[in-house]
Image 1 (spheres, one colour):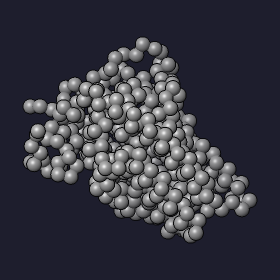
Image 2 (tube, rainbow, N blue to C red):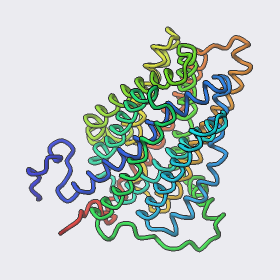
Image 3 (cartoon, rainbow, N blue to C red):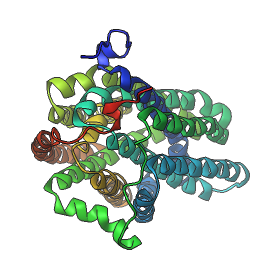
Image 4 (cartoon, helix red, strand yellow):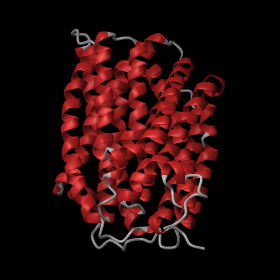
Length: 441
C-alpha cells in the first residue's frame, strides 16, 4: 500500500500522491471558470433589471434557452471530433475573444440592447464552461474517486465564486462596465491550467473516442435519445428541471425586493455581490468539510437531498416573513448548497456511465434541460409580473409553489439514487480511467 503521509492533501481529502498534480490543476481551473461568472453575474442582472424593470426580467431568462439547441448541437458535434483538452481550450479562447468584444460594446454604445446581449452571453458562458469542465473531470474519474476527490475539486469553483463575488462587491461602483476586463486574466489562466491538467493526467487523456458515423443533426439529438431511453438519466433530467423552476422563483423574489430597496444599478450590483460572497463562503466551507464526508459516510443520495430540504426550510420561513433579509438568506442558502453539495453529488451520478453519456447526454441535460427549466420558469414569472401580481398573487405565493415542487424533487432524488447504486456496483469491474492511474515519471 502506498505511503500517503507526505501528501498534505491526503489527511483530510484522501488525495493520493499520483493524483495530487491533477487535482490541484483541476481545482484552480474550476476556480478561474467560476470566478468569471460570479464577477459578471451581478452586473448582467442589475443592468437588465434597471433598464427594463423587474416585471420584464423573466423574459431575459427565457432568451438563453432559445440559443441552447444550437449550442448543444455544436458542443455535441465537436466532442466527437476534437480531443477533450483541445475542445476545452477552444471554448475558453472563444469566450476570451467575445468578452473583449463586449467590453468595447458596453463602453461605446449608449443604449440598453447591449446589456440584453451581455445577459445572454454570461448565461451561455456559465452553461457551456461548467458543463465542459465537469464532462472533462467525469471522463477521467471512477465513482470511488468522485466520492473522494470531488469535494476538493469542487471547492475550487466555490472559492472562485467567493472571490468573484467579492470583486463584484468591491469594484462594481468603481469600474462599472470596466469590470468585464477583470475577468480576462482568469480566462487566460484557465487555458493554461487545461494544458497543465492534461499533462498531469498523462498521455492517455484527451484522445477522441472516434469520429461520428451519423450526420450532424443526428449527433445533436444523440443526447436527447440517450436521456429518453434511460429511466436513470430521465430522473437526473427531472432533478435539473425542477431545481431550475424553484431557483428561478427564488431568484425573482430576491431581485424584486432588491430592486425596490436600491434605486441605483451599481449599488444593487454591489449589494448582490455581498450576498453572493457570503453564500459562496458558506459553499466553500460546505465543500471542503462536508461533501466528501457525506458522500463516503452517508452516500450520494443523502448529498442530493440536502439542498431541497434546506430550501424547504427557507421557503417556509419566507412565508412567515416576506422581506429582503429573509429573501437574501433564502438565495444565500440556495447558493451555499447548490454550488457545493448538490453540484458535486449530481456530478457523481455521471461517473458510472459510458463516455457517450458523459458528453452527449450530460450536455443535453446540463445545457438544454437546464435552460429549458429556466425558460419555463421565466414564462410563468413573466405572466406573474404582468398579470398575476396585479390580481393579488404576492411573492409568498411563489414560495408556496416552490414547496410543492420540492416534494416532487425529493421523489426524483429517490429514483436517481436507486439507479445509481446499481450502476456503481457494475462499475467495479471497469478499468480505472487515467485519474486513478496517476502520472508516473
